[in-house]
Image (cartoon, rainbow, N blue to C red; front, side):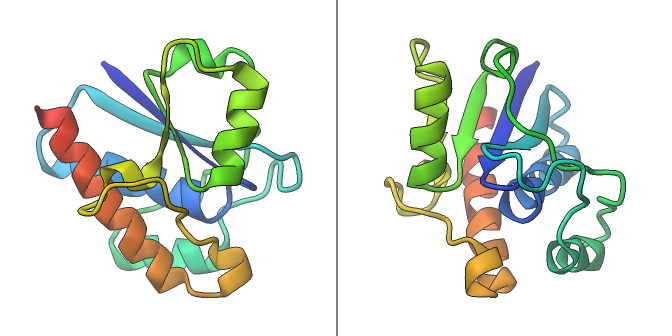
Length: 150
């Protein structure tokens, strides 16, 4: 089993979108040994549901995220997940500060895109562009699926 943790600032927009898209993609591709979850680096949104604009996109795709509640990363997450993915440089910096990264588990999500590199997945909470975030997250999830299949 490969356990993936997606992390963003509040765990209400980008990381839950990635969690649900990744699990849906793996299911549709017959990949049963991958399981994704998501969390936040901050405590600001603890217990809140997925942002309504993210939920609308997922609902449009036939994905239900209504039971998801924001949670913060924990010390045990580093040991419990095989791949930990930050949505932007601030998330990655905060995770490395919190856990260190002795096992090289922490990655930028953009490393899995068609044009891999260390760039941010823009936060739709600030930009208002949830469709752009969806396109970027979908592309990175597809790349991550391909990598997992290898």
